[in-house]
Amino acid sequence: MKKSLIVVFILTFCASCGEKKSDEKVPEEPTMENVKLMTLDPGHFHAALVQKTMYPQVDSTIHVFAPEGPEVQDFLSKIEQYNSRSENPAAWKVNTHISNDYLQEMLTQKPGNVMVVAGKNSKKIDYIFEAVKAGLNVYADKPLVINPEGFSKLKEAFEVAEKNGVMIYDIMTERFESTTMMQKKFSELPAVFGELVDGTPEEPAISKESIHHFFKYVSGKPLVRPAWFFDVNEEGEGIVDVTTHLVDLVQWEAFPGQIIDSADVKMLKAKRWPTILTKEEFAKVTKLSEYPSYLEKDIINGKLHTYSNGEMTYKIRGKHAKVSVIWNYQAPEGTGDTHYSIMRGTKCDLIIKQGAEENFKPVLYIQPTIKSPFDDVLQSAVDKEIQELFPGTTTEKMTNGLWKINIPDKFKIGHEAHFAQVTENYLKYLEAGALPEWEIPNMITKYYTTIAGLKMAKEE
Image (tube, rainbow, N blue to C red; front, side, top):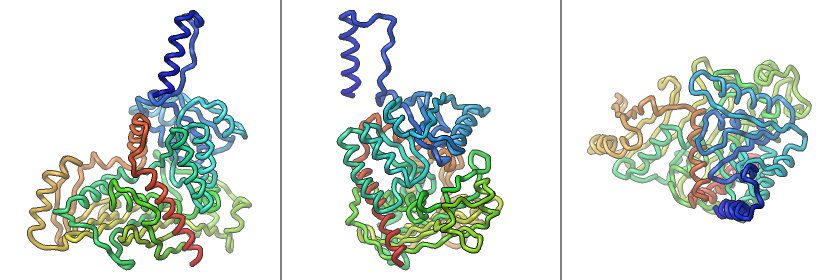
């Protein structure tokens, strides 16, 4: 990088002039050959999951800038947990900077070159804006924005980032889920899939639905959520939060490698509704015996009503798409968050299910919409193209006419491990100095879509 070359030249010149003694140490300039992470205000456990794995390109010392509180302590506790685990322990060294002026301290000191942020969604876009203005790269948990005002700032932030030669990237873990990757791969094989149909609002060409739970286990321990997680003014409504992943997958699978413009999206219908929690359920998730005052606006008859559920149907480049998210209190015993998806093709439908029949693990099925010679074509594709993606994958014809795709268990690594995969991808982009040409316009369109859905749902 130009900056690195300039630093090397200056040091060499000074040494030759005798201006530096041989035993003097010159402060190391952070460069993309030496990635240094700064975690800002880690209010969500995803911030720690980025550090569950060590990376050879990343300095083992991380800097945490945050206000005093349980969120930063939870983050530090998880890092310590990763460092002290018996199998493949991490070796992070943490420098903590705790103050009320944590953002300005980070911007002034800049001990790193990449800001990691996962916390209050209401503050995230302001953190991002300040970081790119200061010449820092951004690695952020979704969603980057939760309202129209934030979306306007995001577009401007991308312009500033380009001007300053830095990168904004959101953490799209679901692109690395094995059945989703397989669904995408099959959709790119015309001999098997044909092409994506146009669909209708009632039977969209592509649908993504997910069910999540407030009470869950992370890294083997019960997750304690901050009370503000239930405040839509801070966290955002469900229709602009988790749906970010789903809208991203629609674009990524249906139009791989293509630039999608906001003008390509037309919102058709959207709705929102609350999840209702008892005081006892709220206490179990947050460890708080009383509702904070800022949640009083959402308390009805002693129960908390939080707008965590949402659904939208829209057209994207002429194809009908639908995404929906539901938050329940707790999953039934032995289950967890679930995902359902369908891509409808002219030759077959690609369906991901995660119900009781699948032992609550995602499974990809293929439902032919044509007859012979589909079976032979499918097997040929699995023997050739599919083996390159996931070696050892097999097919199983079910009695109901569906084909079950059996992906080896070694590729089913789980949600937490996907953070390392996304991070490794991000590090490659940092080294290259650029994202794929479609990533930034598609990020903008992704957030345009979620905000358009929120607007329509509120109007309804």
